Image 1 (tube, one colour):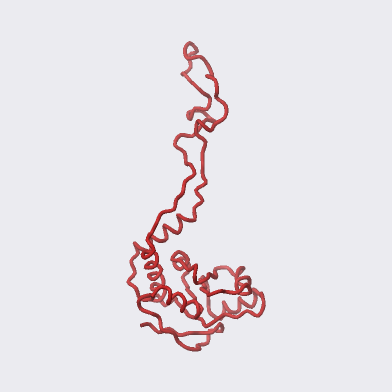
Image 2: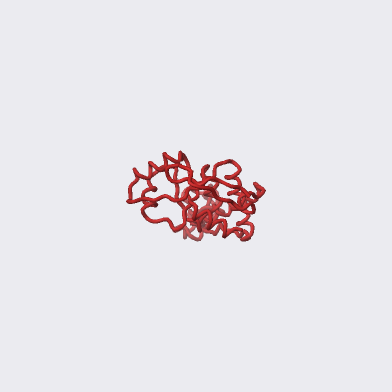
Length: 206
């Protein structure tokens, strides 16, 4: 069982926390992480792209010229895909890109992502971050004290003061523990978990 130090928002050590090996010390398999990240990205696609085929193109209701005798190639409509301004052949149409990944596989990938941050020494536990008011400048001091560059901060039931104070800080994202996902963990090199959020995630994944 891994034991990590718990610090406050001024980066002063205030205690320690035991992390369950079945959550934070799982063997990392890149193919599982890749599958779950692909599913996450596919679910974000709107799939509203579309081109007009011959049925959707306006005009072209009459034959532009007679079949024979003009010396030109035969043509049946000015909306032919071969003509400028014509229809598109086999163009993209609206579709749903989502695909299913089993719940156990998604949970396993989440454990692997957490384990990768712990093994790289990029997982830190902070007891809490208190904001007396909505103030970006005050939150920037916390970011400086914790030496954050590009970090994902996981909070449990984060209040609006913290969320609004952090939204204009580049490279820092705050996410609720219930919405923690593999994509965000891998996207941000530094993972900061508030102690309550870490306990919640650990309890949920054990």
